[in-house]
Image 1 (spheres, one colour):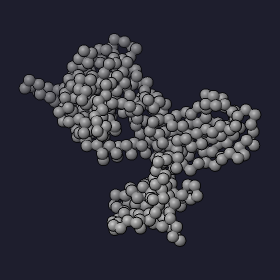
Image 2 (spheres, rainbow, N blue to C red):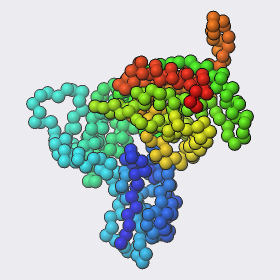
Image 3 (cartoon, rainbow, N blue to C red):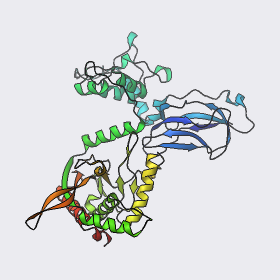
Image 4 (tube, rainbow, N blue to C red):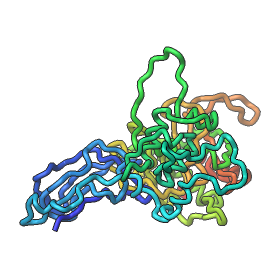
Length: 428
């Protein structure tokens, strides 16, 4: 009996992925544990191993295909003793992606959503793009999700050709229309999103969005639109930290501590001291975390990712340093496991190595805060009424005001600043 190979769900939030590369071809024999393909998710490119053994009978999804929904059949294996004739009667046509990606519960609402709004006595606003009947009086065949997306983007469904079963308009058709600028004048905002205005005569090239870039755009837009940000900035003197770092690094060749290692440790301990900041908004509850897991932003090709130093408050500097180097290295290779970058309780973004003096970071939902760290530089300071020079680092805390009030944010930054300026207290 043939065995279906389906698009795996490689993270809890994954709904679809890109089939980057096949590592087998039709006719190849595979055993359990053999790598079949590389799948690009929103955060990394991961290898997919075979669970069963057999012969690759049919590859249904070509490499390079985007937006393949989770659980869609991507290939068929033949068991021992079977040949190509076993594929007779097996549906080897690639499944339409959108229906698999939509919630099943939404399907019964399709007839009601597809019907023209004749039963509604109240007049509809002229700007609302209601689904119009197709030529000949027939209703437009479209999934509920496609209708919702089209309405938000101001797209006229009657202008689209569906690629779903029986010509049904599905999610990818609306996305393609939005990218190509097929839209009504629903509003200036949606029209701008669907068809960006280019300066006359400007030279440009369109760069295809990776899954990672799409997710970054969606999540950070959501964060700025739905999370009430406010910002607190403090200057931290680094001279004692730099002296301690130099002394510790001089004691052994087995490790090399960075300023960022101290910053991670300081943030972890500060969150332990101010647990009200180590929380998240839960709608009708505040979720206060009992562990301190610091997500550290790492720049990679095409975007960024936030590997997690778990229990950062309890780990030593050397352990944090080694773990951070290892996680950052695998992040840049696209080899992090989902549990290594999902589930942090607070975030840290450090652009000091680029010479950035100060910046405001966007909160990484569902977390409630992120500290943005700038470069350490020599600045004039006043001590005991006298002017002197110190190495100063500006740090800005972005807070979700639903969770962290001004006083709580100030307490967290005060604790953080104290630990940076007196680094030996991190060990207490």
